[in-house]
Image (cartoon, rainbow, N blue to C red; front, side, top):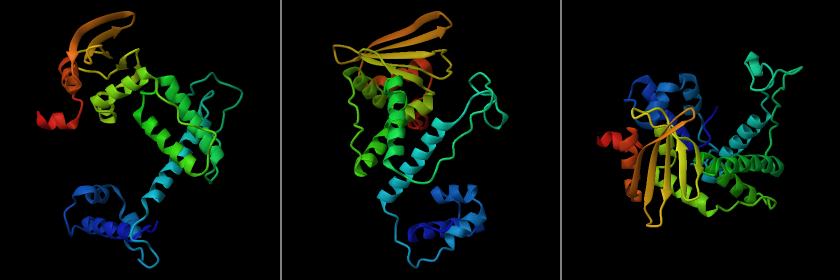
Length: 265
């Protein structure tokens, strides 16, 4: 695959030099030098500059990313899980007379496909409380923007309820996607005035955390241990300010909420 711009060709020229051992493997180029084959790197690095732009426009990069997202979402929607599933793997549904085959996604990018994907993500977010997956929300935002730019008018971006807005704010104060990645948080949802979640395994044995906004404009945090039908509140902390959320979470779960905290310690 040839480079799409002069800047990309020069970048892979550096990667090629790193693979040869001419310069140390550091930074982003160093990571690529370690993982990418020499043949592929050479294809990019040997691209002629003639006719190539200095840089690929950001709008084009975003558009290509959106296309990829649409294809991925359509692929998920068309995957069959009946019977033995695909490639001989066990499916999620009872075995049927035949397997559902994955539909081949045609090349192209039109409003109809975009509408299908947007509605699919909107349903997923609505079911999960609109805070379950911040990445889904970001994808939805980008897709709707492109949809409108293409002249789409049927789909509109939904507005958050007050409880959803509070839950989303709490998640952002905890660290957003970084927090989710560091703690294994899942099944996030909104309460009347807060956020609830299940977290990954930790030294304290905490399984769930609930954070509610109180009238004093501070938070109340509950750390819960759930085992089957047994539910026990291990610790309840009141009067928590937003800049204390991560520290209190770490104190009672033993889990770091960001790499910065690990480095600091």
